[in-house]
Figure 1: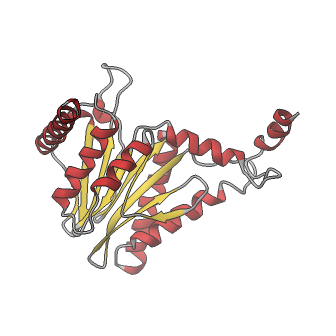
Figure 2 (figure 1 turned 120 degrees about the horizontal axis):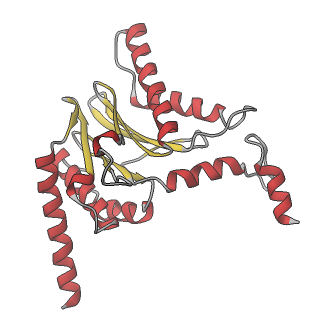
Length: 248
């Protein structure tokens, strides 16, 4: 009987269950959890965005998997969940940022852009004939000289963070971020922490599966493969040292 009751409410995208839940939104959150992990770290100089890019087959071109996106000169996003849904939200964010430039001749604020995106997301949870977006975004940028980092939720809720992870292995990645975060991190320190957090969550990843960008007053900059390899070597060396100490 309870199962039948639940089915009666999870068929609609805009129906509340008797206990106040919208099941389709919860299912969308599960889609995000099944995605590869991405994270953001706010530093004194800007924001670091990092993603684990895993391919289902050795025959797939890894470059065709996009997890990090440039939204504007000083705005970037990382996505987790359904790729098609995430791309739709990224395109919406880019259009919104460009519209702001055309109207006012200045870049859109990080918080303003985030709330515009989440307003769009929220509409899909209360309109018939639609479903919630099965994706979440991390949006990082520079506003008034300071880095800001926001996360979106399939319910349409925005949250501001100092450091946050979404996607698969979120609990492990978030724990590593909480252990290593400090208010005075530089961009270089933020890059190192991002790689350490992803390695801590999955010790079988390789350096070529990692993507990193920085968003600062210098703009949106992609971290080159050589720098990622060096950061990865330092992170894995630290993991090996901790394992040796544990055995002793």
